[in-house]
Image (cartoon, rainbow, N blue to C red; front, side):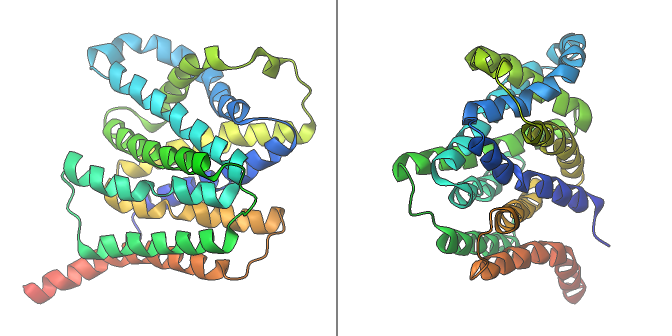
Length: 295
């Protein structure tokens, strides 16, 4: 039976996988990366800042306020870097660079949480990365505006993603998932609000824009983070890292369906990603069989 933690993490990754395509739709309507980051934050802030203010004394007494501030800061860095990369160079390359994160997560998990890593887990991560490389090769956008800067933004988003996953694991056993989502977004909004142009409050929004913004606020915002933190509290972060490969897979499918991109050799990239995820699911089975043989 598949542990429920893996199911919740997989569902959150599906919701996050549509971030790039939704951001692309907003860009085509004249929005920029700063606007998209603000939309992701502000909707949750409206319902989360009161619980945050109410619980500030508790967070401070438990010495959680400073980790929360860092968590919020790296949230802004991750999202701004990723959405800027999407703006400069499109979805696929940006997603590839963002999902260098599992490599950093594996390193952090080993030295911070003392999690044991076996060769099979490393092989599964390698399979997933090979899948992303294939997606990258078959989807490369030769019209990249400034490839060097895009690479920097993309890699920063990947490192920040890994750091945020570590923070998520740190908080998962200390704060309830829903409250953690409210605290994180509300704190990040208060940090980010002074940097946002006031024009965002006075521009015209179409019905499509409102739907896209609602998706950014609710599905990859409130719902996905709740599912992810709930799942993290039940599985090791090094194993959960492999499931993040679902996100570029979903992003690729969305780009094919909504932006009419050809499938071609992208199928093989998707296959490698699925094999990596299947491998991590089978890891406990292989481990139990190995123990029986040894016994």
